Image (tube, rainbow, N blue to C red; front, side):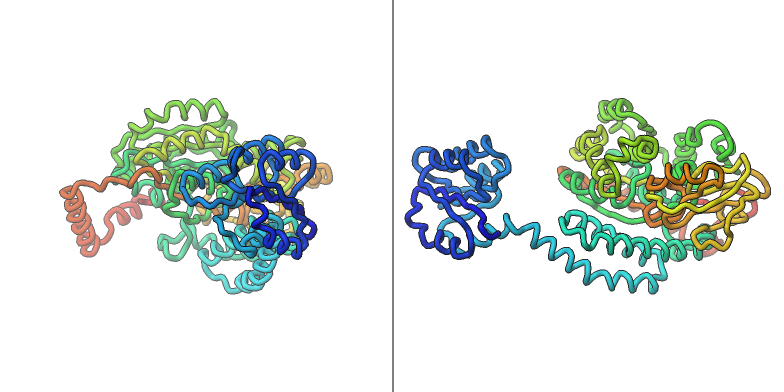
Length: 569
């Protein structure tokens, strides 16, 4: 702030000599003029750090001078000073993107604070953020060893993502390496937590003893809103959306929606589209899909697309939940696909449920692997988030959401899995039918270092409710930021895939996924069901509970005897 140059423009500048002397004692260099014409001439000749501009001056008033200043330079901070508190003047000044607004009479201390806000804001924020993270660092680190539940790890991950966002805005990067080391340690402990508990989670029906899992996402966060007073419910799945990517999109949507609810669920393994997304739309684990709907399931070794029957699986789940509603399913792979849906959004309002799958983020992660240009554009997580936000700002998806923000709808946004930037290779050997994914392998006779703590092995796929290609198939999952590489051409493939974004394995970034419920700001909320219908529902629910207490859950007993799907909703 020392030696910063200030231009003060006021037709009563002689009355402000005390203020000017005060600023000069603080180390500022102050030029003063009494009219807009002289001010503009000085700005054309010299560089200034701040302009104090009187709003009410004879001849050229302050707002007019402000407009002319912005034609000369768009980066010069202007602080408007006025005697008037009229709302329209404030709105005009703020609309013209002033840096601050002060009401006369101003005190020297007010002027100094305004200067500090502009000139030292970054420095003060940097110091505050670094100090805040230093204080939080120990608390987060201590929790790695105390965390016993999934909700504990949700809290840890959300704190780490918050501090990542704060630190990346700092010009001082001294704490960035500390944060990265802490995230790595968090991932190590989280992966061990998942390895200890995963098989229990997928095999227990007691939801209080496990996280919310992929097969339950629609039944938990979408179906309860259908037919509950909203004209339509939109379930939007953005493929491969990480929690940190959602947080940079959140401010954009907050202009149009209330964030009614935000929660975190756990993606099933493998954290790959074929498994996780099919599981969401079927409301079942992959093993149950392969048994109950074999025509809709393809194993890793089968040819053709692995997610071609999502609409059919969705229909089966809707029917199983006895939702007698008109619904639609749209998968968007290109901008043209997205624009076609956006142009047709009015007609979709005739459906009580609309499901939209948006594939851009997943395509971006694959393109980054294959394209050196995109890899240079997104060299790290911060740049990856920035590209994701830029896409969202100019996408047909935001166009759709802006329209929906004017309607009586419920919007649910989620994803099927995330990605992690892989850095460390680990060797594995398999036969020609072994899957090619870098974060998980399915095959027989997999050969790798079984003592490695960064590999999670499932030798009996049925224990994890996973199908298997043959009797002796096993699954191996890379944990933390490791990726599998074959010994053949090892150095070439390690160099090619290192530092790329991959999914399929176990990490905070891949498994900790957001579910966001949005309510439009411009609409008061859903219309409740008619009173008679509500009373009827209550009577039916009461009868159902009495029946279960007396006779047990008949549907569960029937399912157990029939050997059908393990998941019954």
